[in-house]
Length: 265
Image (cartoon, rainbow, N blue to C red):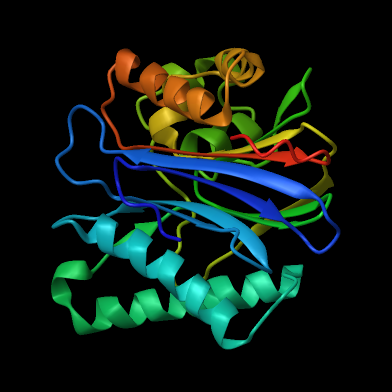
């Protein structure tokens, strides 16, 4: 389901192998903005199991339109083709379908020209995860001891870091750090894919930069490793961003792999 802004959604998903995955998702408008341009979507009511975070951009609330159309279009493609397991090529086609629909909307409505959205998409099939990435929303994998950023940011400042122009520790203070180099809505869309496995009690975190602008990996690890339910951890992450300033919309999805299935989120 697409999670409404400022509401918290939780679910427990038993897959065909008897493995349980718990999910909690929440999107918050933040302290400054009046419109939430983030869209989060979690599909755990049956196969295939997938989730996504999209952070829209564009004037006249076009960012809100872009993120919503993208998530809805991906869902429509998956439903239309009755996919039960999502492979890399399926995800690629679904995102391309969403990109085409987004560009068609821009052609029809002058006010939507230039809109676009980030997209961090994760498909889960038992202990296997495929992540598709466009933009600077992120995916993290936490195994109880180590947190790892799965995705690469598609930003101008990351390009400068990769090129050796600036050092990684200078990124937070760089004036153009929010310039996106890839977004759904661009004519020639390039998508990164990452594949990995997770184990019992591991967590997958998807989030928009409204969180990561205020929370480094140390803070994320502390929250994910803290006592309490997934709901508690989700609320704590939202609070971290709000206490840091909350200048942007904040979106969080936490999924946990649970072989035992204790029925609590």
